[in-house]
Amino acid sequence: MTTAATPSILDTLGIWDDPRVVQSSDATDDHVLVENPATGEPIAGVRLQSSAELDETTTKSVEAFKAWRVVPAPERGQVVRAIGDAYREYLEPLGELIAMEMGKIRAEGIGEVQEVVDIADFAVGLSRQLHGITMPSERAQHIMKEQYLPLGPVGVITAFNFPCAVWGWNAMLAAVCGDSLVWKPSLLAPLTAIATNRLAQQVAAEAGHPDLFGLIIGADDEVGEPMIADRRYPLISATGSCRMGRRVGAVVAGRLGKTLLELGGNNAIIVEPDADLDLALKSIVFGSVGTCGQRCTSTRRAIIHESIADDFIAKIATAYKSVVDNKRIGDPLDESTLMGPLIHEESVLAFENAIKAATEQGGEVLAGGKRLDPGNLANEAIRGGHYVEPTLIRMPAGTHLPIALDETFAPILYATTYSTLDEAIALQNAVDQGLSSAIFTGSVRAMGRFLDPSGAGSDCGLAYVNLGTSGAEIGGAFGGEKDTGGGRESGSDAWKAYMRRQTCTMHFGDSFALAQGIRFE
Image (cartoon, rainbow, N blue to C red):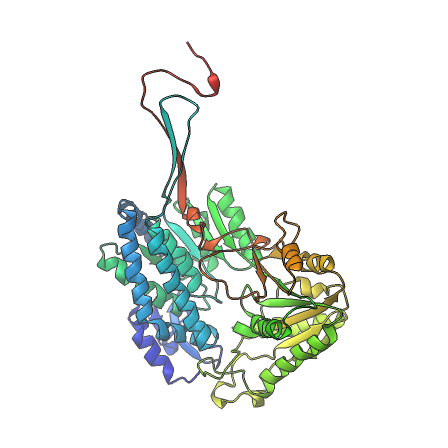
């Protein structure tokens, strides 16, 4: 990432106008210093906010909710339409800011902003479809129906790896449902949050709702813990690690609030002998290398039929080596880059520790395995960044190394073999997380077995056939099972999480009637 691009992006997005943002040289102990993971150089300082500021922001959000909920839903949809148009206008600079701040390549950064545009479009249509249902009453001259009502201020906690899109999934749906929102972003990507929230807030303010989208930037103990404990937030939507999700879930459940949890993933691709192997190879490489392995849907395990395993695993190794040898790792804003950096030095150390554990446990490193040699970076200006080699580790046949059962947020792919499809599905399901899964096959029977409607196939929230584990579309509900948290965001009927359901019964007769045939005379 060339430092010359930094001021123009921040200026274009109005980030310097935010009173929390200062030049990196002016940052003090009460600021978080935002670094560019591609260069290791500071970008800016962002002042950490206090619990008192959180309380003030929450109070404003409560008042904004009271005004916003009485706005007819289709009218709310028109405000969301205008917000989506704002993101269309700033698609490229906001995508480039994501690349600069968290390290994903420019195409992926722009694609992330496009997700917000897409979910805004989805929400506009949804604003006229917040349907309840009617049902027959067992009593004469009675009408029963259900309706969905605005829920209240929604607290949204996001991770660094999708610093824009995950907020968008929540914010666009919550807004058309009649809710206000307060966002606590990752301290690793606060600039993207400031720019993202600024665009939405400007549009909402012009429509007469200045506090509809709140933003609080602070440490977990200072603002995170008070937020999740605050009864004024009927829903907390949190994306992050399983450890974080357990904490959020316990605290919010303790006050009988609602949670929407999107947590870790340990995603596998099964490759059948009749699969389109070229398609499978491309999907595995993108799924494991894209975003430097820092997606919750990144491909972390490849489960390959024993009859094709040796040749196919060798092709994966060749592809990984070519990414390094052809200098396709580096500057996220360079169009030729396929893989950017890890987010920080701690992630590099976690990568190295995982590989060390894998070799000690009997794994064989077939490609990568090291911090990237600076000589394999095309641009000398980024040699202070957090770069590693995409790594392929072969496990013993039909089993997992213990380290492969954990999610390491890095470009590490563990490969093993199987003999029967039942064995492959059992291997895929043998992890605590249950987010994304995929199978490559030419067989209708194998596809049916994988998607078995009895639930005996994939146990994940996302299941793909002849597609990789990454790249969900906004039309389907996104989320997973088991330690992934069970939440659902984005499309389908995920909007129901942001509303409260009310059953209504109306009596239009003059007789006194009780349910269940009870007589009381």
